[in-house]
Length: 166
Image (cartoon, rainbow, N blue to C red; front, side, top):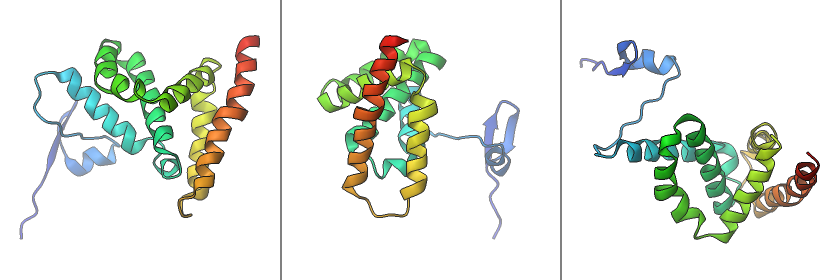
């Protein structure tokens, strides 16, 4: 049986798929859509939800997972593609965040944590360590509570004080 060679299109032109993956590139196949901004938002949010904190998310509550994805998505769009922020808010952020008080509370806490520069270097790093530490353990409600307490009490209250002083 003959092996089928697959190709991917990159900046350099056509590459064999194996070369594309070796170069640590991502291929996302999307539906044909007139609104390319909507396509980009859908692809980005799908990637974030499946690739960001994959091990730790198993031990987070659904609202914790959703709020982290929304916050990271917002930060990404604001930095990399500001013209898409409105589409993101319309299609993703508003329907999910504005209908859930818990998600909004977490997003507000992440905003405070981020304003003092500790969201990615501390919170995300701690969640990554958590995922590595407990990855093979059965899902446990106490880990969800511990994560909530870490965000709400330890990081949240300490950073409110830091933010006011800063």
